[in-house]
Image 1 (cartoon, rainbow, N blue to C red):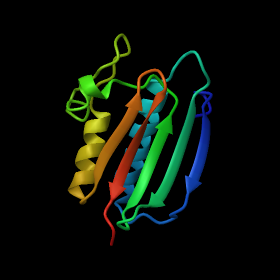
Image 2 (cartoon, rainbow, N blue to C red; image 1 turned 90 degrees about the vertical axis):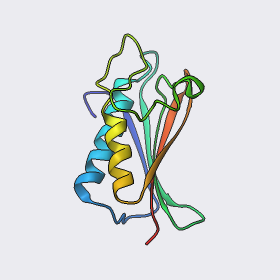
Image 3 (cartoon, helix red, strand yellow; image 1 turned 90 degrees about the horizontal axis):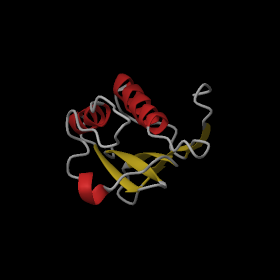
Length: 130
């Protein structure tokens, strides 16, 4: 992260998440890697990591960046597919978001995204309440 010159803001309201540690580490690594890879070269990268409980008692892990953002109307249904890439000429492998989705779902969770082209994205991983 230091090499990326990113500012990381952490707001963890829920210190404990009952989720497989290797899966959770993998989720965080892929979210951070995507934020770095799809950064906006015209501004300093800022990533906010936040956890909180929603009204249903689910724990939400949110990763917000000020990167390139994406057009969800065009790509939203394909976003979490295997080998899905959308930012040319920036090519990724198209596996990170797919892995996050399958890992979260395998343990009863899910992932969602909100994004604005040119402004950034927020990925939310929802962990089920106990």
